[in-house]
Image (cartoon, rainbow, N blue to C red):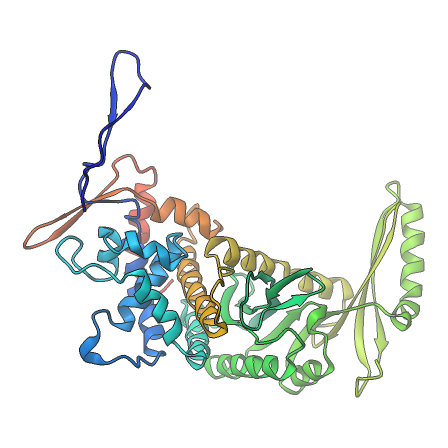
Length: 448
């Protein structure tokens, strides 16, 4: 690239001039991408994603394979460059080229923005569904003892849209025109990570019970094939309170705790628990008390009676009553509600998706292209989750993906290429050299 810009003077030191120009040579601000690419090759993630997609292009006219394009796009997103437009400058970046398997200086430049934009229009919706199976396989293949229990958390999130985008509707709850992607996470008790195993973009915002049941059926059956006899548990908020879902979970021996909205019958049934909570609050020096109970309840749309856990919180200013419909989770209401409270971590994972890899950047007019964008962001997120899992014995074991990027990927690097080798000189003042080298070694010792 040309470095013809004039030198810039900064009056920062007394007695010495500070001159800045762009003549440093073949440098990259993303030297840590080599660790991420090394991990990706070990996991086989982008390779499996590419294999899930049909390439309709004429082979004789192809310069960049599907694998090259997916790796470039996923690595860009993981590095904080969520827009295809960023490829205009990044296609020359030596660290990104090397991560994608190209000679950093002598190799052909990576794909341009128009090529990556065409990728979004080329991958079909069926391929996005197949990629979800790849995400689930990453969770199932992670190195761990055989689990006794797998917990599933399902939730939706508002992704605000702008302009005339296909199938974007106004949502009264959020007060915006948006998409409502649906995410499913899986975790094993005792592990810090809740792994993303499905990311779907529904084509409307009404309840999609059939689609939800199909997604859950695919996950439940696959997990049980991998671990026969494993105990499966599901947590969800009131948006998923549906008798068809309850029946499906019960028929498939999946325990669950799902929030339901209060109504006059539930409030009447919970009155004894509320009375005890008020009495306990009155006797407390703080005027506060929280009590739990359980009641039997059958809504008119239910085919049978089910157990409902009640949580009553009394403070000097208010009383809050919450309800969970539950099945297969023991008999202690407080413990059941504590289990349900763990679903809050999946909300943190969704925030990571939106803020860390910008899964909400769905600015395409075509709905199918936005579905592909969600898929690519999800793949980048799963790769970063693999990096965090790899770092479980380091200070980065619970770091947000944005922090992982800043500290483990954003490393200044000089790239030198000769006829026989490529040398990457990382910044000498990088403060986490030992940890980074340790993580590189861990990739070769087994799957994270």
